[in-house]
Amino acid sequence: MASVPHKIKRQLIAPILGAVFFLSLASFKNDFFEIAKQIEIFTEMYKQLNMNYVDETNPAQLMDNAINGMLSDLDPYTRYWTEQEVERAKINSRGEFTGIGANVSSRADKLIIVEPWKDYPADKAGLKAGDEIIIIDGVKISDYDENAGQLLEGSADSQVDITYLRQGKEMTATLKRAAVEIKAVPFFEMATPEIGYVVLSKFNEKASRETKEAIKQLKEQGATKIILDLRGNPGGLLSEAVNVSNLFIEKDKLITSTQSSVEKFNRTYLTKRNAFDADIPLAVLINGRSASASEIVSGSVQDYDRGVVIGARSFGKGLVQRPKPLSYGTQVKITISRYYTPSGRCIQALDYWNRDDDGNAVRTLKEDYKAFKTVNSGRTVYDGGGVDPDIKLASAAYSPITTSLLRENAIFDYATQYYYAHQYEGLDKIQLNDKDFNDFIDWVEVRGFDFETVTETAFAKAYKTAINEELDDDIATSYKGMMQSIQNAKKKDMRDKKEELMSLLTDEIVKRYFYREGLYNYQLKYSPEIQEAIKVLNDNAKYRKILN
Image (cartoon, rainbow, N blue to C red; front, side):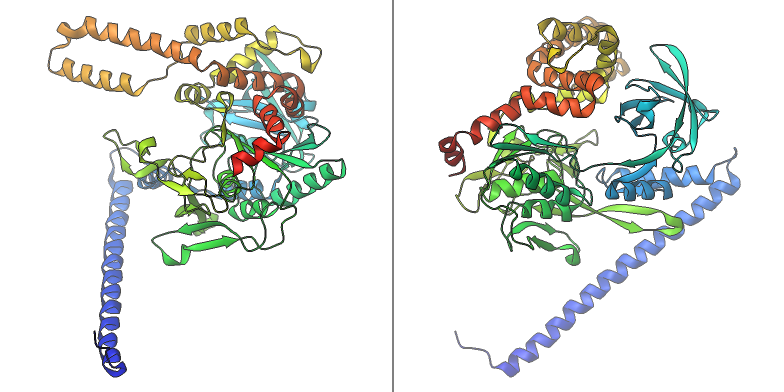
């Protein structure tokens, strides 16, 4: 084919570029017009509602509902933050705040103490996990419309009076607030004379620094191998995920890349420094609650064949968020891109842009996972549903029934009851058995735990249609029989998931007696995932075989 002279090329390219620019500009103008049009309609409607509605309206509540409605069709990570939520996000990132030193959860017009932290104000005042706070400084939680947890916040050394329920008995306490430090690495210890164990619980600003310091101290104590525990780590700062990976992976290596419809958000993230230790044998622990930054670290370790990943498939959050400032100190945290591991995997499990008939995000099916190759050894790894570990253990899994039990606080509430019915003098004395598990199953059944399966939802929908069509008399008996069969199947499902449920029950119960530090010490001895990691790291042939 004859080449095109440069002059003719320039004559062809100039109109093409101009056309592209014109089309882009036209597209932008069309979008801008549509946005301006919709904002004008919304503003007028908002004004008319507040001025003319038959009952008195709450302008702030109307706007909150409108914002939440607009965001509800997007992914759950794109969220509007009030001024208080913006400040709380900054605190989480820094890992420091002032308060009573406890993890507190809102539930049905009351605040529940989830976990008092050892030697902080809540613990010193005698508060226990499961205590229900009903009044704070004279304010009834049931009458408080805002986030009641904010009432526990305040300056250091200020006092707060609370009334709470414990096992149905009303009690009071006065707490003195204090500065609280949230460590990214709450625990590290020698698991064996040669293996160091590090718990990394969150990716705040101190994550890589604290992880590096923990490994340094463990190496000084004789560690020649490392277990990095990311189980239950929900993620955090992407930059810290890259920095933690950089502790084990050499300089100038791709850790993750992000892709978006907005070109400026398409980025690659490389390691910037020499690795702290690029050769030390490594095992990374993950489970169904390891998400986001945890998946970047475990995914990069797996993709570079840098260590063995052990546990259960991770959560599957392959989306990146960035906060954008709004007026009056508020923000919107927007999902701006998807991230990809070094091999090219996007491990996002749920597709929020393609939903089922009920409006639920569609989960990527196993048969739709795509195969990729690890960078160094060419091992096959898959995308689409979180990071799949090299060694899978049932005790680390989070099945749908287990996730539902956690969401309904069944494990937490049972542990509260168990704590007040049993006494233990030492950490090693806590050994749950088959009787304890059967007691839990019976307790769940009596409690009326309501976990609706997809099958139940479909049957209920069909039965409702039958009622509308006046056919319910003919199928009522069959419907009740089917629903009872499903209930029996759910009970069997809980028994089938014994390993994962017993693991979670034990962890929650141990914390009640010996705090989180006691839990970590307990897991060092009894956790199946840690024991498997020790076994693999002590078997060099097996370790190398997995990675090669």
